[in-house]
Image 1: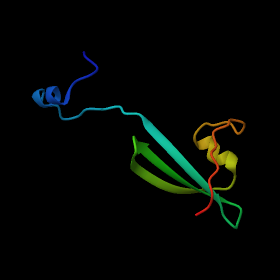
Image 2: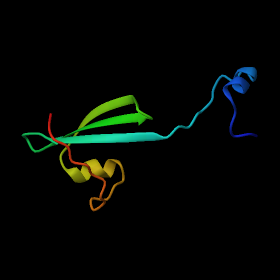
Image 3: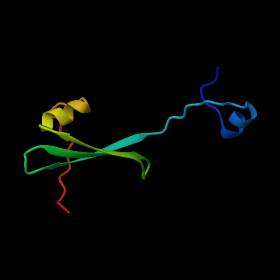
Length: 83
């Protein structure tokens, strides 16, 4: 079985269900609230297009990092000014 098909081939094959893979980027912005919780906004992007967004609260930065299986010593942060 082939792994890759063109759109024209999918139409010819009358395919009802298919999966496509495209590089996905996740941007997370965390803001510390007055009660010391973190409010994280998670944005899913394909290229420059946002395809999903959710907001979740976490009681520690470690819990937020655990969601993405990131160790707290990894250097993956960009600091931005507040708006």
